[in-house]
Amino acid sequence: MKKVAFLFLLAILVGTSCSVKEVRQAERELGRENLPGALENIQLAMEMEEVQEDPEAWLLKSNILMAIENSQNPEYHALVENPLESAREYINKAEELDEDNSYILDIQQAKLMLSESFFNSGAIAYNEERHSEASTLFLNSYEVSLEFESIDTATLYNAGLAAEIAQEFDKAYEIYTQVEEYEYDQPYLYSSLANIAVFKEEMDQAVEWITKGREKYPENLDLIFAEANVYLTAGNIPEARRVLELAIEKDPENANLHYAFAVNYDQMSKDTLYTKEEREFAYQEAIKAYEKAIELEPDYFDAIYNLGALYFNEGIQYFLQADEVLRDGYTQENLRKAEELEKKSKEIWSENAQPYLEQAKQLTDEDDPNYEIVLRSLRELYMRTNQREELEELNEIWQRIFDEEIDEDFQPE
Image (cartoon, rainbow, N blue to C red; front, top):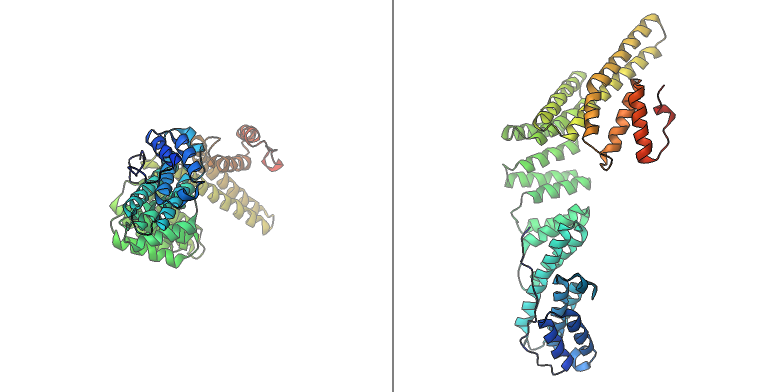
């Protein structure tokens, strides 16, 4: 995001032709940076008909409001609501009254200052994570700049980015498509367009955007990663795997790429469209890729939790197989098979899944939205493996944090 120097807006006009004393006093107070006094005097002046027909007076009022918006004195910010919107209105009024273009340069100067003021306020809002407001301010800055024949694509892109972060996806998409028409040099533009298209369930459009971005920026790893994500979401696992293999060749030490590769194989291992052998192969590849991501980034929560969940679900499969065996009858042979399968499931839970899920718990805290998910997984694991002390400790944490009664199914036996 570009940086713009803070504007100390003084009067554009060197002198005013309006002889009303309140106008002259407002101009003097603005020069002294006494903004309450300037505002009070210009408001009194604007009650007079002759002042209302004077373009210079409207420009002066717009300058006062821009100065209020850009002031570092927080008390001044309460003087008027939406000062920049009003300043824009007053500049337009001055332009309307200036029938012979006597003040065209002053009006253009005011528009330039207004565009910069909108941008400055947008940057402040963005840094304070008021992204929806920031998007509107950036968009206003861009629109004003068009009025003096300047196309500021960087500011328009910032408007789209802020809207995307604010999850105003329709607005962001509309802005981004306009930015793309200007051929703005920003690879992230295409990943954003593709991601929003995925959110809108427009998969063909998502593929079109990411393909266009990859053609324009073939070596950009973020776009390669985004392309894989599009194919994963679309269910095209082979194509996602091809893209990820390409990415890993380019950046083998990137933990995020190995994680994405693991997710790809994780999904494939659950997809019954593949053969049993293919799913088993995918399962083993997912484990290796998760482990590689954790090796490269030991505190990688998503990889750690997902690997724990992968093992936990494997244990569930053995447990369900045991149930299926018993459905065929409680013969001595079936009871033996079921017991072996249940033993296998508990071994996987306690030896494979539990260490990763407990590590995931250590990487989160009560303020983390993932904390509840990890607690639920561990509670179920402790219950199924009959770890009474661990389950009781977790139940106490659950009740303290969520102020919620424990279901009987989650109590120790």
